Image (cartoon, helix red, strand yellow):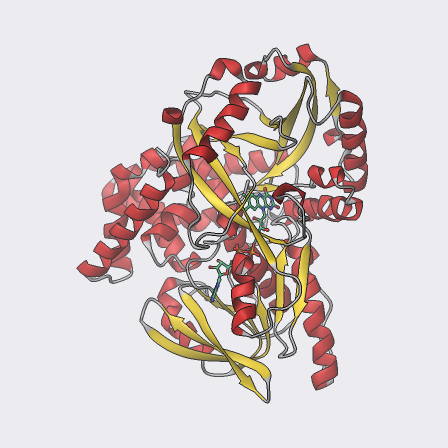
Length: 554
Ligand code: FAD
């Protein structure tokens, strides 16, 4: 059976979307919309989801990529939030253990820093307690020598001592895709490149949306009992369309990240460090690179692709050079970057980094339910809140009972391991899968990258790679071809940028490896998606724009 989340099924999905009334229509295919789709579909509701660009193309592919307990919330004494997201990260890790992996963090304590030794020790203790952190992952205070021994690059004169604690690292856009794939298994219909241009009303109540399909340049109408606006940074634009933008509003803040090759900055451990202006930033090793972020500045520009300025980049470089002075990093050392927007709730007189990261739900008289703010980490709880509201409305409006939330126990696509999770068991499983794949000539390093991308779905990728390898005996092309096929048939890859940005993350973490394979990928996609030469050219140009954007500060 064809996957319901396949680019080849787009036409059929669009026909189905306009053929009946859904229980719920979700606008926005970031982590929030995806989570709501899974929650609602797994409670038995009929679900439609539309996304104006690619899934996760908004903030959900532009974060620091951590599923974290929110240590910074402690500073603002948001204890309830620390507890909620701290416990939540364990659930997200359990349900997607191929892409949400524990990461040891070093927190250097510096002269005149925001955090002193005593406050750090207490804060991390409270954090571990509230978040219910496993004993083996509890915080450990370190002397100056122990800190440098763990991370020699931070041997700075301002370093006093350090602390070690745990966070979880993830791939935000892949997490979004895995949620959507699971939602599709429960019957949700989601489609990318479909923009809500207007809402449809009946007796002043919102009943649907007019949607523009950007691939076929066609308009469709989707009707639903309830409409959820999960458009992140665009939430107020939708509230304006609904003429319900009153009271609280969004305050956008921009955060950028930069990527540096390990050959220039060979950081062994992730660090979370003091910038000196009361802000903290992360430097996180990943594959052959280290990424550093983030900034936090008020943003009022175009929401679609926020800029990465030289000043943003220099701010991060100054911070890293202060804590790791021997690195002496310069703009020329930076490979690429990305920039994302936090849809925060405006509070008069507060600086960007003081604004709460809490989520907020807005109700309009027309019935539109809007959700904004929050974190990637808390997506499941945010989704539960929204679907619980829909559940209440169903009872009131239709006297119909809807089930309770069951997503705590739902393994996401790719995370459906049969064994009891431990890091050791996961590594052993990955080794076993490599044994099954290695006759194609793939290196263990390349295979593991794919394994931690696709999890239990790796079997499909391996099977097709074997088939292609048996025909061509070309290892690299066989695996690439198999990955492209998998992403088209199971992850609705529709454009070249979807593959290079949100499915493989190559534009973020291995931008220099794209050029040699770009034409091959474009040719394969053109064949599989039956592109005309013009569409292929359009895709290449579109990719080139994104590529230039990622290096625009140079
Ligand atoms: P989005 O991902 O922006 O999704 C909204 C979607 O709606 C977009 O894809 C958009 O294209 C679509 N849309 C808009 N208008 C329309 C329309 N008319 N029709 C159809 N679709 C439409 N959280 C963490 O937990 N950990 C972190 O490490 C972390 N780091 C962060 C770092 C930065 C720099 C930033 C900015 C945020 C970070 N966050 C982090 C927060 C987290 O990334 C966001 O809370 C989350 O991604 C928001 O998801 P969303 O689905 O609400 O919004």
